[in-house]
Image 1 (spheres, each protein chain N blue to C red):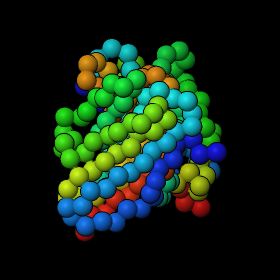
Image 2: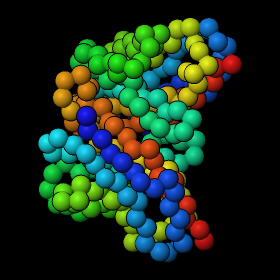
Image 3: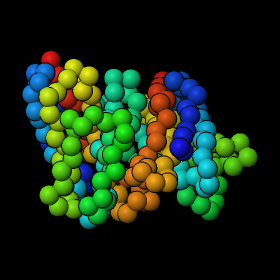
Image 4: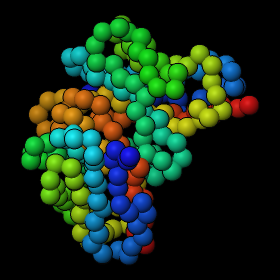
Length: 112
Length: 116
């Protein structure tokens, strides 16, 4: 059973489009995250979501917005995609805010 | 903010030899330290963590890490490397404080290459 899953695995789109990446976890965790891995493999937090409290990294453009329909899902919506948004996006989850984070397989986004 | 540094971009080791991947940390208070591994085109897999307790932490796939408070280090080790250990290794520290979201701050990663 996949613990943290993401769809799609690959996403290729044109500049200016709006897209979404879905994340689901079946671990019963109550905290979820989105990270961005750039072309140099550097990982950086984008969002943290716990018990309806959203913490946003101040460097994330407001074109990015997470949406959580329930505790098991944290989807990432991106408006007006730009070339610089091309990256691998990882979803993660943990039980509470201090436990181990478990990562999904990633979504490779390519903006043309 | 809490941070970690991985001084080596790449580590090369022959199969069967011991391996060490270095990580140093800079934190205020007690550190929550983690090691993850990323295989090509895959997600991050958790290897081990240090929260408190014994300085030698044992993890998955035969890996272990030694927490050294005086040297502010948390090096990853394995007594005998396998070719299949070749991957990208990330050290991370949990951020704390207001507006941190308790997210992980990652090092830049160290590429481990184990040759037959």
